[in-house]
Structures are given as C-alpha cells and as structure tokens.
Length: 112
Length: 110
Image 1: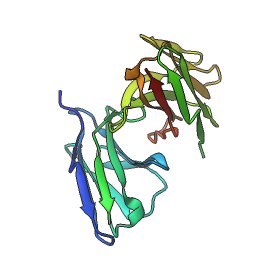
Image 2: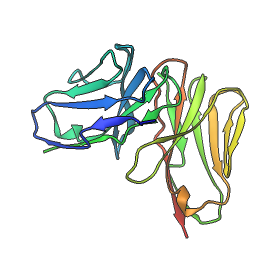
Image 3: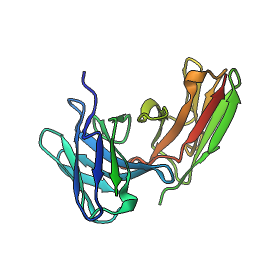
Image 4: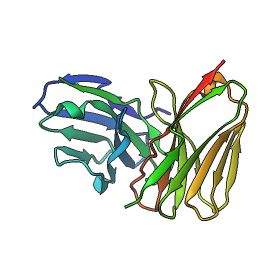
C-alpha cells in the first residue's frame, strides 16, 4: 500500500512569505502528526489531528497552523516566514494516534 | 511537563562491536516507541513497548522497557555498517502527543 506522501519535497521561500505543506496519510490512518526537524533541536512536535480535530499542539507560535480534511489529508501553514523556520517538516500518520507512526519523506523548507 | 533524555548523543563503534542507547523519561509512560533514521532519510518505526519489564528482539536488536515504565534501551549486537543512523526513542504518556528524544547518532567504522 502507498506510504505517507508529502508535497512538495523542497521549497525555497523568502522571509515574510507564507507556505502551505501537504500530507496524504496511509489509507485508513486517521491520525496525522506534524514535526519540525532541525540539526540543533531534533524532532519537535507541532500538532496532531484526528478526524479533522486538532487533539494536541506543541510549543510553536501561532504562525504555525494546520488542518485536516474529511479524507484525512492534512495541511500545515506557516505565515510570516522567518529564517529560523528553515527545517525539514515531517508528517506522520497512524491508525489512531499515540503509537506506531509512519513518516513521510518530509518537505525541506529553506527560508532566505 | 514531560521530559525525555536520550544518551549518548553520539557513539562511534568498530564494526562488530555492540551498541546501546538509553532513554529516560521524567514521567511514567504508557508506551515507548523506537525509530531509526538513516542519513538523509526519515524516521522509520522499529518497535513499540507497552508492558513493564518487556523485552523484545528483532534479529540483532534488543529492546527493553524498564520495570517502572520510565526507562528504555535499545541494544545492537555486533553492529554492521547498515546500522548507521540516528536512533530515536519516542515516549508516550497516553495522549496523542508523541515527543521524540534527541536521538543517538551511531557511526560504524568498517
């Protein structure tokens, strides 16, 4: 079966712009989590969605937001981009959340 | 809030040597998961431990969950160059927010 698909794979944006990243989970998986990975900070939890509801949120500013659609696909949005937002953004899906995540290949965002 | 410590941060081994990474949580866990991320790749789920004192094996990998469900370890016997990567523990306290340890990066010299 198809894995977790993230698009785009690479993105270059300018400071102040906004960006939307997309994630299609494994078919049947209803939980989608987002993580930010940087060399210095490791994997940082952004938020988790289940059945279109955000169930938990990490310690990120309000510029980071997300949503989940009825088909479980998820998007995350970052507004007013800062240089420090440059990172690999990973999406992970699981059946119900809390265990056994399958990660996508990530979106590498570079802010210049 | 929950804090997790993973040690060591780095480990250099000669091929054939053993390797162990440890994960310590400040709170009692519902479960703990382990992931491996190869250089340039994404984390891949290895295993989940749920029961106190649980020990699971996957070929040369042995995973343990502490009796108090606060600590866990991953041990690799006779490392190979294919074991290179970063190993993350991911403790869960029963909610839907799975945090990750900082990871242990394993280097294997042939």
